[in-house]
Amino acid sequence: MFDSIGWVEILIIVIAGLFILGPERLPSAAAWVGKTVRQVRDYATGAREQLKQEMGPEFEQLRKPLEDLRELRNFDPKRAITKHLWDDSPSEKPNGHPAAPPASSPAAHERPLQQGERPPYDPDAT
Image (cartoon, rainbow, N blue to C red; front, side, top):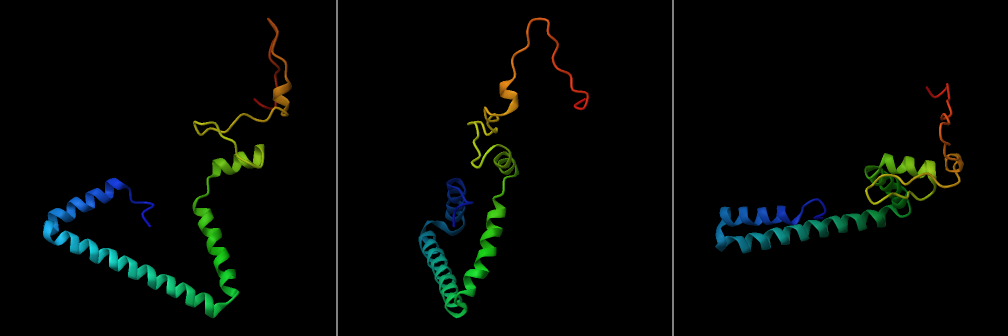
């Protein structure tokens, strides 16, 4: 529930509540908020369980596309391209950049240029 709210934001809310409600009413207001959140969570769980009972196996068929949509929200195109191009598991350097291509690539087997040797020229690449 508090994935997107950090400790700093919670502290600011508590301090604002302390100024708005005062130290006498703040504990009762916090208890009311906690009770209300718990009630809403219980209602949501009950509704989900009732829906699951009534729909039976179709509930899982409905739930699968929703999980796929949730995965799309966390989609990282850079990681997907790296995974597709290099291997099945994306390996990244600690700074977040993709790792170098595997040693089996053709670029890894090229020899270094000798003194005075001109680099190869590819007219299609320019």
